[in-house]
Every structure is written in structure tokens, then in C-alpha cells.
Image 1 (tube, helix red, strand yellow):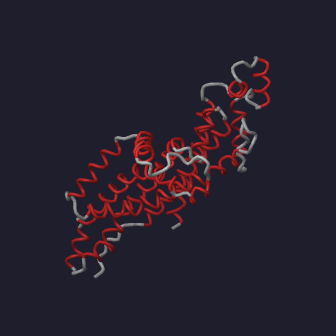
Image 2 (cartoon, one colour):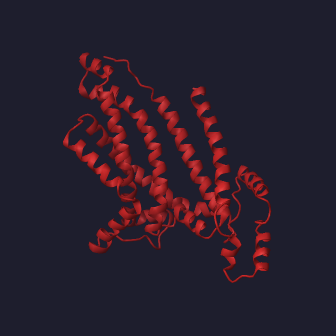
Image 3 (cartoon, one colour):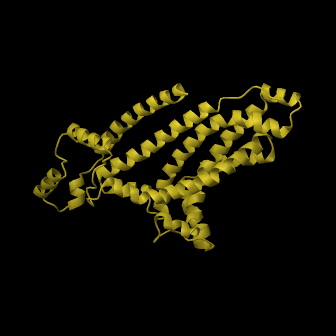
Length: 315
């Protein structure tokens, strides 16, 4: 059990260190000058130089990295250059909205993907199986922002069934207005459902045709027992890894969805920080997204190792 956890944990630690260096280097290499963005194009060189000194943007890059790393190690992500508010508070402000969207999307996509994946995996080549493959090709060919705009044009503008944006609501208060969440969640689910269902379908199809499943049937076990005791446990290991990737995809999709539907979450905050060249905020958001991704993959790795194929047939 210790080897099962310690090795992935060590890998995750090295990934986190590499990500921290990469995030700082890439955000520092962004084009433009934060001081110019804040003061405007008509600011004098003296004003820009004074603000750069005030924001410590004139010190060498390695000194800024050491100071930033020391702060991160103590849980301090710095202060926003624009608002002066702690970056951790800025991130926490959008955390509820992003978490609510992600949790709702997972609550829909996981049971739906399992149901579709098992149904098609047990009947490869069926009409439902062919429809799933066709839907995968169709949905994967449509970018998230285009799908979001299509849904808004149809269900909000033409039919008037749902609101086009969630303007005026934020955080957990969005839960009191479920209508504004339907279209954003639909976009997030549509991009991840097919990939996850397809992974479950492949695992179920392979496990259902495996030797241990055939032996279980020869021992007289019912089809339900064979599926739930022998097929599903062996099929869900790879699906757990795909689920972690689906959550990664959801976090990436949240950035687009929040921007299109005017949802004040972490994705919107990240875009605003990039547009304003607010480097501490950009670095904070990027680091939080990276840590979330690493943690999810670590959890998925451990869970998939625990789901070691049980190939013994118990009559």
C-alpha cells in the first residue's frame, strides 16, 4: 500500500516543481508591460519606470522567482497588481462558481457515460454503438465556444426557453437560479461525455470477451453477476484515468464557458488577469489549475492501481 501511494506521490511532487518553474517562466515571457497597461499609453517614461520599481518589476527575473517561490511555499500567491487584493482571495472569489459548474457537469457526465459505455460495450456494432461513434465525431468537431453560441442562439434567442447569460448572479447563489446553469453545463458535458463513454465502452467490450468472463459463464453464473462482478471491475481501471482527463477537460472548458455565459468564476478571473497583464494573478490561477490537474491524476493513478483486475472466477 505504501509503494502504491509513495511512488505516484513522488512523481506528483516532481511534476509540481516543474510546473511551478514553467508557469513562472511562461507568464514572465508574456508580451507587453504591466506598468504601461496600468498607466495607459500616454504615461511618461518616468511614470512607467516609477511604477515598475514600485511593483518590483525592475529586479532580475531570478530574484522575482525566488521571492515568488518562497511566498508560494508559505501559501502566499502575492497581491494583484491592479486591485491590490491578495491573489488567493481573488481566486477564492471565483472558486464557488467554477466548482459548482464542474460538480454539476460531473454529476451528469459520470452516470450517463457509464450507462452508455456499458450498454454499447455489451452490444458492440449495435445501433446505439453506431450512434455513439457518430455523436463523438460530430461533437468533437465543434469547438466549445461555437457550441455555446449555437445553444444560446437556439434556446435563448430563438426559442426563449433559457437565459443567455448569468449576469447578476455568482458563487453558490447560482444554485438558486438553475435555469442559467443549463446551457453552460450542457456545453461542458457534451465535450466530455463521448470520450468517457467511449473509454468505458472499450473496457467493457474487452473485459466481456476475456477468458475469465467466459469461464464465469461456464460456471453457471448469471449474466448480471458476470457483468457486475467480473466485467465492470476490470473495465473501470482505464476509465478512471479517462475520468481524470475529463475533469482536466472540464477545467479547460470552464474558461470558455464562463467567458461566453458571463459567469464570474476562476476561468473568467484568469482571462481578465491575462488581459490586464496582472502577472501575480496569472501565475496564481495557472498554479492552482496545474495543482488541481496533478492532484486529480495522482488520485486517478492510485484508484486505477487499486482496481487491479480480479480475474479469479468465484462460483
